[in-house]
Amino acid sequence: MVRTANPNKAKSQLAAAGDTDRNGAGVRETSSGKPLECRLIAIQSTGGDVRAAQLFRDQAAAVGIKLD
View (tube, rainbow, N blue to C red):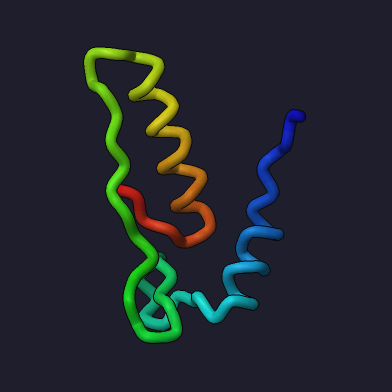
């Protein structure tokens, strides 16, 4: 099954769960104030992994989730 990205739906679902950008920094926080962020690990010697990680990071950032 192929799915297309739907950032507006993701934003809506995150907001409905109470995860909003409370301080205007571009990263959503949970209702308890913790930022929605996590570490993303990719193998640098594998170009495909690095590119996939960059795409994933960019799409997450578009909806307010920070991936390091």
